[in-house]
Length: 234
Image (spheres, rainbow, N blue to C red):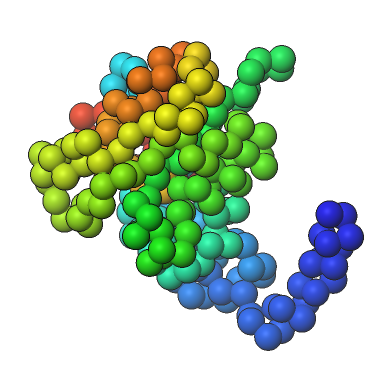
């Protein structure tokens, strides 16, 4: 692995020459392939504390959903810029609590995609984020802890109630992972948390394993005034 990393570093100037680094949010020229321009960094609404989706499920969100974070998510999820998973995961990890020395690592369980959506997109963005968080030492990755056995419509534009109905019974725990998840701290990983309907559907499924706790880690959180959100500039 060290040889591969050294080779990648040696090839970086050539890659930068052929594909000049551009900010994935606005397209401005930047110094490296895995960063943002200064203006986009300053426009990220970084959260200063975890949010509570409810008393049982804290939310560790890196940013609030604004124009800059939206551009990053669109480039990542729909533009195929999967290399952004490293940057987004680092921002998420900065908001997550450290695992105490000697404590059992939490399980990082990505929000699942239906097999047809996975086939169309080619990757599960939540799964990529979970893998990067695992590399950062934030938990133990369990890619197939949950399954989405029923295809759901695109939830964008749907209200809270319609989202809840669309997801009813669509997500379930993987029977083969029930024992693994029992008595463990679970961190559900996703890119964006909007109404919370998907996370609640996942929470309902995970509860069957009787975990110790369940939390959500995501890159962007749609602002909800009821949560009393506090932000800070990067």
